[in-house]
Image (cartoon, rainbow, N blue to C red; front, side):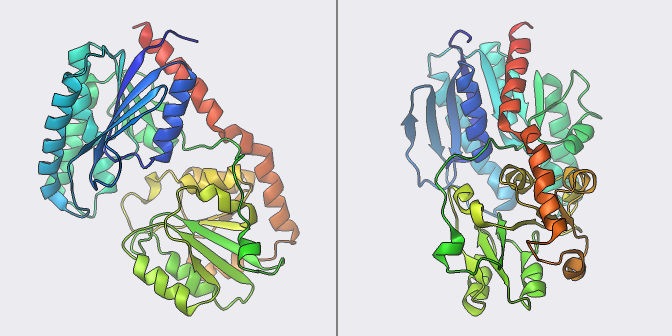
Length: 378
């Protein structure tokens, strides 16, 4: 254990919670740190303050609508001013500054200077690529230029997968870029049987998609349409997004499609799932850089994955037989026979069991221990 040192953490959402950030905070607390988390609450629906034993949460309410585009920068500036004022009034002498994503990086650099403390930049996304289709070229270039300029002054860069590590390594050469994957420890919480709840026959196949409901970016509707002719397949969809109304309508028409809405703990529903889907629009610029939570959920719960996403997902399917790589939806029923008693399906489940311990969050906690030990010695 280390002496109780305090971390100032900055987050661009209201921590409802943000599951990745929650796991990171838990690990830092396990390592003996206290965390002050300052969040940008853009909806104003949560408590402004939460005080736990080693975690204090402060939500700064600056309401900002989704899909606001460039106008959102004015809300960001307002948040930064309020955060700067509120944190500066705090008498805590922070030992580390931890900024999540690009929008929080300028504020992180401000407090790095104020407290003469190391700054960790956790780049959950490559921002200008993630928003590629939304922004004009000049704005994308400006965003990327700003990020490249700012990361020269950070002390540690964290990304979520090898592909993004390779991307940033062209621009950040100060030290090794750390990978903290979106991994999961074994699940020990409550389990809810979807098969029992909806009275589904034992031999029928349960397929899940849990994530953003946006058919433009994640065309789950195409898979449902393609496989709906198979009477033994049931789809469980959870999440929120642009096309919530459309998935609701699909569920009303098709009695083998179940829309669960937004779920705070999706893992409780995974015990009966036979296949899990992570499928993206392959025309999007960000396609090959995604780091799917779904992949690691699938590994943790021993569920074969159906995906079209290159990178780690495709590599694990190719090298370790943990699922099905389906580049074209029209080929899905040719690649998968949807018989969970089939030897090839059972082999995939056995293959997952052989490697899923390599993707447990506990290993990330060990990485954090090394990262912070190194920063303390600088």
